[in-house]
Length: 260
Image (tube, rainbow, N blue to C red; front, side, top):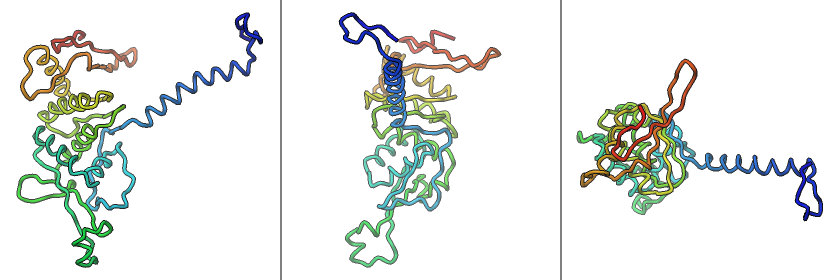
């Protein structure tokens, strides 16, 4: 029994009322957290290479961000602006390829249906232009590009809330890893209500973020994105004999680690 104020008609709460109150507090917070995480965008550490038969049809299908296939579906889903923006970033990163959407037609369709671009007779296929004079399937190039494109598309999609990415640098060249830093800065700058949680082993990525902080404090290049230390939190996970320790490494306005 919990006593209430003297001005309350019933001066005590029953055990059931206490239980109801605690459930409201505990489960209410848990439900909010579960809802927030449910709406989060999660990109796993090993993104799936689209198979040869990966086509977009108007009926659509269910794909996942966790394996990266949702990114390829978005590119295929008749969204030319997303394709153009993805290609712009692939050029900035020096990826050596561009995304191309190829339109296919049902061989049984008649001329009238094809001339009208009938939606039930049109199928889209995603190809990559490597600059060698021919278009290839994503499965016909190195694994790096299939790992990179879902990360780029997720950053460009522009959703607010929480985006989690594991090992965005996997299978890609250090020069591209550096460029990912600018991509992530662009993502949070364009959508102010967006938070990125990046699990990475890439020193190159971290060094780019620190460099942008240093340049913003001093002299920023004309095409370099501005970034400040208050927008970055570096959490270091250290496995020691006493167990796993999680430490935040503070960063100053000069883009230097305050902590070792």
